[in-house]
Length: 287
Length: 93
Image (cartoon, rainbow over all chains, first blue to last red; front, top):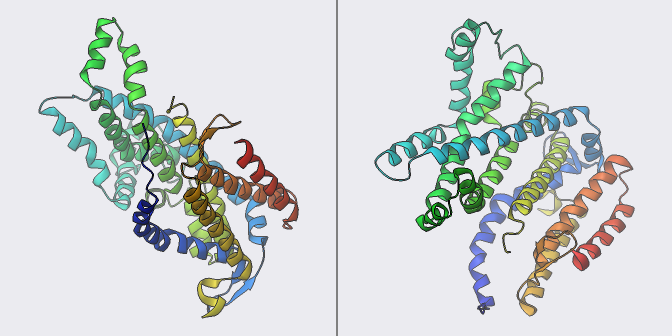
């Protein structure tokens, strides 16, 4: 097929370029400018070169926050993606229950992030929260405000509750777009359910799953409100993820230079991981 | 207004001018040689010219960061390594 070459069509991209420039590129430029300077307020800046980058790269605090962030991100991806696919596979494709299931699945996504954090905070409190009370009644010594393991358990459970629905809805959209003819052909060939999943459903869901993985990867790397409201980064620093640490440096300590350097390193990590995931998942798509 | 606006400095301004010049030159290149020159290189991934610029820039950023973290904040050598990386990416990736 011959591709139409119309270079003037590129002018239609200009509004998007202007929009992205104002909401992303200009703030990013300011961050880059801050990352090589020191400020004490009054809009006065002093050149510090690349010292902030060196400080952040050698900082144990940054390494620990990054380690916690990677553990959090890959744990929730390992749970939410398979769980989302499994739930989408069990949902009805036709009939009145479709709307009911879709609305139920969409509900967690409609709740504001700070409310989710507050809800789970109350829900998991050891004395008055339902989950905390039940776990303690069962003999577990559960207290997410005191024990790091319990805080992590609650944090991951909260994220899974809040965001698995997104994976479900995307996977479901991929599943309902598969024509019946594929299933009929599989039945004629005597394919078992796992073979249908492996060779029909999974390949057909590949694009939406790529979007789901990328969205959850980027969102989980940038997550702030829910863990901040739930645990405040504690107990100690046990649930201080990168974003919480960044806000502590930038707004708590008003160290704008180190915070800007950390933001850029953070940005590069998210960029690289997203690109790697996208490239690996879309590999062979054209074949 | 001068350089105090957005806390600009000459090195950061030069950095962004280089990035914009690189993107603009991609546009000019695309105008005269449309199609993006897609191919599959040594990493066995499909790339166009824009992808190669992206890989070059991100790779260079990591080379610089690695040098700052492991060696020093003087970046002449990592700049040379980054230029070699750019040639490698545009030639073979």
